[in-house]
Length: 134
Image 1 (cartoon, rainbow, N blue to C red):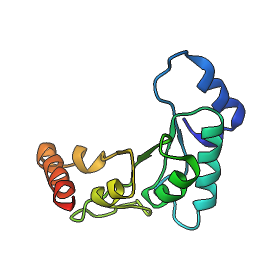
Image 2 (cartoon, helix red, strand yellow; image 1 turned 60 degrees about the vertical axis):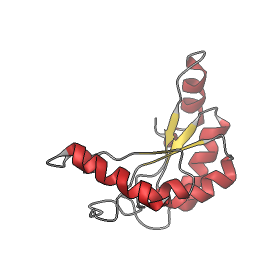
Image 3 (cartoon, rainbow, N blue to C red; image 1 turned 90 degrees about the horizontal axis):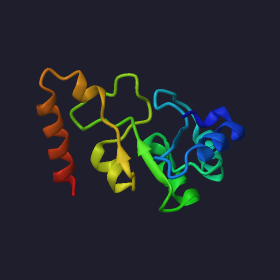
């Protein structure tokens, strides 16, 4: 859900279902450039205060969110672009290896796999790059 929906919405969703699945708050799209760190951090703190499990945020803000939210607050990262891929419309990106090293809990790799002529090959390339980086 979009964390920019505000406190009332976030709290209502967080309390809706006992034993709920993970609920994540979206912060600022990775296609947005500029100085968005303060807004991302504000939305991440709000999401945590309202009882969400974590946030979806650009890899550029992993460190800020981890410092403010702690180890148990989940950080899910889109904007993943392997070294061999173009960034496209994404402005705040990182390689899969860099995102994992920066303490992302999960990474999202969608378009690169879905749009590939051979999705399994794209997936293997990404996995290989991550493994080689460790």
